[in-house]
Amino acid sequence: MTLPRPSLALLATAALALFVASDTSAAAAQAPTYGPELEGFDYPYPVQRFAFHSQRQDLQMAYMDVPAAAGKANGRTVVLLHGKNYCSATWAPTIGVLANAGFRVIAIDQVGFCKSSKPAAYQFSFAQLTRNTNDLLHSLHIDKATVMGHSTGGMLGIRYALTYPGQVEQLVLVDPIGLEDWRAKGVPPISVDQWYERELKTTDERIRNYEKATYFAGQWRDAYEPSVQMLAGMYRGPGRERVAWNSALLYDMILNQPVVYELNQLKVPTLLMIGDKDITAIGKDAAPPAVQATLGHYPELARQAAATIPHATLVQFPDAGHAPQMQEPERFHEALLKYLKP
Image 1 (tube, helix red, strand yellow):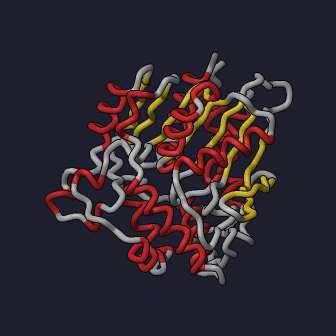
Image 2: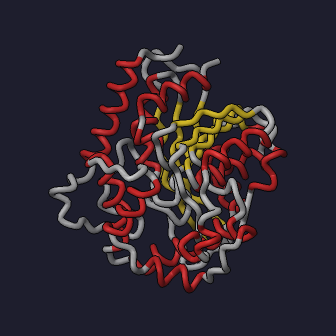
C-alpha cells in the first residue's frame, strides 16, 4: 500500500537528517579529511563488508543491509546501486522509505568507491562489477530482488539485468547515464592518465559547482553539502592518489563501455525515473562545442529509452536535474512505491 504523503515526507526528512548528522554542516565542515576507504565518515546504518577474491587479489565491498520495519516485512528486497559521485550512504532517505514500506534494502559501495577497496590495479568493467554484486547477494542468500541504480549505478543496473534476468524482479533506473554513446557522438578519446590528472584537481568547490549545474538544475540546498564533503574529503586525505587513480579507471570504463545498444534486450519490467533538466554527459567538456550541444538531452533520451526497452514505464520530473531522489524526494518516493507495490 502506498504511504500517505505526510508519512513519506516525514520519513524522507528523518532519514536525510540522520545522514546529514553523520557529517558536519556546510558552515562547520572545516574541510573534513577522510581516508581512502572513507574512514572517518559515518554511514546512516551499520556497515558490513563482503570479502572476496578477484583478479588475483583480496578485496572487500562495503554495504548496508537494512531490514524491513518491524511488522511490515513483505518478503521482497531492493538492491541500491549508487552513482559515480555518490556513495550508498546518499540513499539514506530512500532506504528509510523502502524499509518502512516492508522491503529489505541492500545498499552497496562498489569496488573503487567510498568504503570499498580501491585496488592499485584492477580491470574495471560493468561485467566485473555485476559479477561482484551478484556474488555479494548470493552470500546473503538473495536469489531475486528489485535492482535500482542511479546515474552510473543505472548503467550497472542495466548490465546486471541483462546478465541475470532471472534474478531481477524489477529494474528501476534513476537518471541513468549511458542512454547515449558519447564516443560515437563525437567525444574524443580520453586516456586514463588524462582522467587521473583531472581527478587529482578535485575540490569541494568543483564538485559543488558541477552538481549544482547538473544534479540540481541550478539550485543548491544545505542538505546537498554532506555528499560533496563526503567525496571531497577523500581527495583531501592521505590516500588521495589512490582515490584519484580508481576514479580515473572508472571514468574510462564509463566512457568506453556503452550499454545503450542493448536496451532492447532487457527482459524485466523497467521503471525510468528522469529529471528533465538533467544535462549529464561523460566527457562533454572535452568535446567540441558543436558536439557538446548534442549531448545530455534527457527528455529526448528518456523517451527514446522508454520506447526501446520492453515493458518500460517512464516517470518524469519536469523541474529536477540528475538527482530527483534528493531534489524532489516526496514525489520521487510516491512514484517509486506506486510502481513497486504488488
